[in-house]
Image (cartoon, rainbow, N blue to C red; front, top):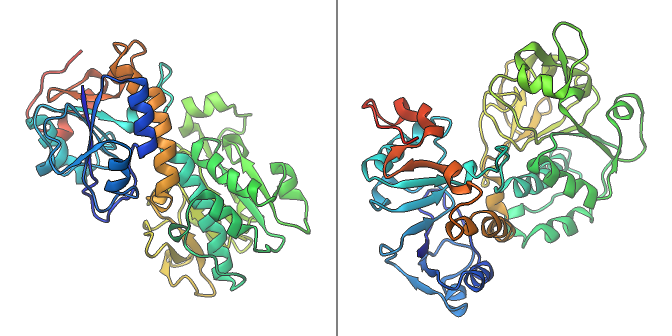
Length: 406
């Protein structure tokens, strides 16, 4: 088996990689029979020389490999026929901008595996960059607050070495007694919580958050039923919400009226109610000053996320009444941070963490006959045909009907 670590070809450049040199060494130790090539890259955080010094071949030509592993989408013209590819394809929601690439995967009879579709038997995701999105998103939210009110000027996360450097900078600042609300309990939210806890910000219950006044900064982490209620007035339940989200409506307004900084780290299904609505933002009692939309669903559950922002220009303002973007420093504007590729700001930490997960959950499946079904569930196409789990993409990828692999 020959594995290629491919270079990232998307623009803007992504400096992350699935395997850092140290992780590749560990892979080789655990599975000595595997051959590994690293495609040369002048973008990757880890240099070509770091891979060479670790004993790996770095080359411009990896076409003789069997499995190609990358992070982001591979341009259609760079895909090699009849190979196995592993990357974030961003196709499972029928994303229009990747339709051409998906068609090329079909035409070139490629086996496509997606990092996003690596799940266990209960369809829980096993690998991802969510934790690092949360870490950077929380840092950016605090940074935005300091810039908005000219209290402190933290450097961009991308210029710092890693998570510990972010925390060290955050510990130098003094926050006023603001209230921070964090939604979600998944990897994204827990990454954000790591930062808040590292800053020694006190955590309080949702009830206390709403009812009490504090002389120090505090935060509260909300679960689904903390900010959603049943339309019929009956008591809700988490399992009921996930089964019948259309029977619920947002009750986040009470938190909007008590919150200075909102860090959005929740997962939001298409059928779920919006969370922070335009009406809530227009309410004279709304107290929100900064929204760090880590999940970044444009035109989604957070009304002030009118567009994604970028690492280069991460902040913009939002005016509730015209419902439009404004200058970040406009006195009437809510500050919005909605960078949609936050882990790119921590390329070293994110790459190292992702490689650990990939080595634990994915690589063994190539050597144990996929006894746990990891590869089978992650496979979107086999030899250019849609697998059964992803048959719903048939119309998306091509008008022609393809044979479905059971």
